[in-house]
Length: 280
Image (cartoon, rainbow, N blue to C red; front, side, top):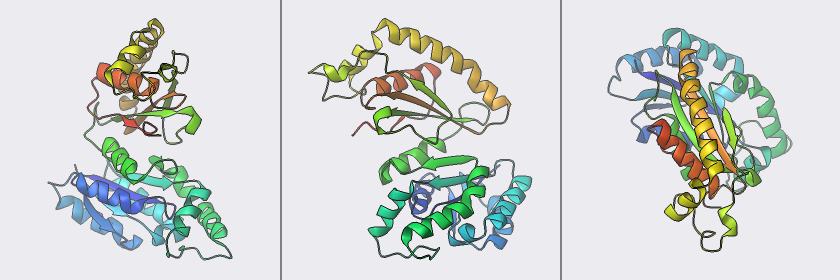
């Protein structure tokens, strides 16, 4: 059955980038269709798009001004398509303000100030965000990273319809807000304090060997992988469609990168790891 996806969220949070990324993955994209037509068009598009990876509706101004109507559309799609999901894109207010100030676009919710417009939209969309199946916070990632994140989430499933993705990150840059499980590896010796390793990352063999040869790292990997080996099928059995696992260290360049790559390898996950902070 063809996947059906509603994509919405805060204005300026990255809908256009997500649309392009899904198109590159072979999805059939329908942009800014009136809400009242989505269910009918979704039925036709799904039936006629067997070669497509899925059908995605990019919902803009109509969704942000009619949140209850959007939720009704979501419910109807879910009744018709078992795989129908809602993706909500978010970002902190200061990030959205910065993005809008860099363009000449007008915010769809006109208020006294741009900050007021964003606050008004956020209040309206809170009920939609609460109902979303997937939430991606784009505040700390750039356009290329968002495209990579979409690719990792919407690649083929790993276990009985469950798509598993992994993220490495640095706690100093903020905890990811769009993940399900978080593991902290800051207790491991930090390659940052080794002069010859500092310029490298956890993707480089010398750093990976330095991290993984630690006895504490092997204990950590054994325990985490053992837990995930039974948890992932359990999540799939309960009907969860997306699971994101995050591994964090201090800066997100060395330990978390090496550990996340090794966990992915041991679990046999097909998707690559999204290294959020590796270039910082």
